[in-house]
Image 1 (tube, rainbow, N blue to C red):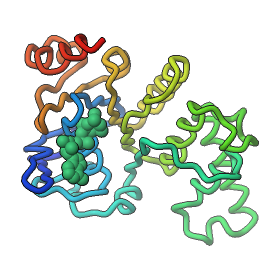
Image 2 (image 1 turned 30 degrees about the horizontal axis):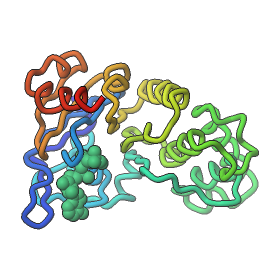
Image 3 (image 1 turned 60 degrees about the vertical axis):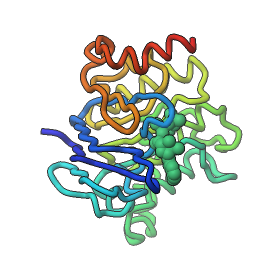
Length: 248
Ligand SMILES: Nc1ncnc2c1ncn2[C@@H]1O[C@H](COP(=O)(O)OP(=O)(O)OP(=O)(O)O)[C@@H](O)[C@H]1O
Ligand SMILES: [Mg+2]
């Protein structure tokens, strides 16, 4: 049984076919990489999964339920979280304050306006920071954090509310080697009970981190499988890995 499935999903911009008949299958509690050359349709697919845009054809299923017509916030309530490519944090807040905002975001106000509720929000915010290994920055203002830590905090905040499915568009971009390794650890840990769909250009990172890999090319799925299967796939080598090697 898949947590997330798309059936014949298609997207068009004018007469340009950005995605054609995409059948993506994401297993629960797994790391699923989405790879492919620039313009392959990776971000377009994530936007459709998150509900930011509507497809011109096909459907999206979460846990056997058709969510194709649901807007972003309804999908968020069903457990779909996403991070953005550009860091967006409020100025002037500490990490803990930012985490509290994220925790209370989807709670009815009665749940957090009274002192007992506030304490619960604070505890959950602390737990969120711990889970993402951000505990030691709790009292630090977000604007004075290193870029890699900001990125991690942003992902943590996006996913504060018990997401079952996380959509991460190039979460490693702009991070140092050390920060990438740390984020990879966090993703692995999260995948114990969540599905993570992430876009990544670094093939070595994909091979090390992913349980499954889907290769997009010109808006179509070129291959799907374990990292080993995909690496051995002749068409993938020709269309993508070879090009990557040539760039290196
Ligand atoms: N809103 C839009 N209007 C018109 N064309 C678009 C729009 N969004 C994406 N496209 C086009 O659709 C194709 C797929 O874009 P997409 O951003 O999904 O690629 P990608 O795989 O994420 O690439 P990259 O690796 O560069 O991020 C590209 O040719 C892009 O120019
Ligand atoms: Mg993209």
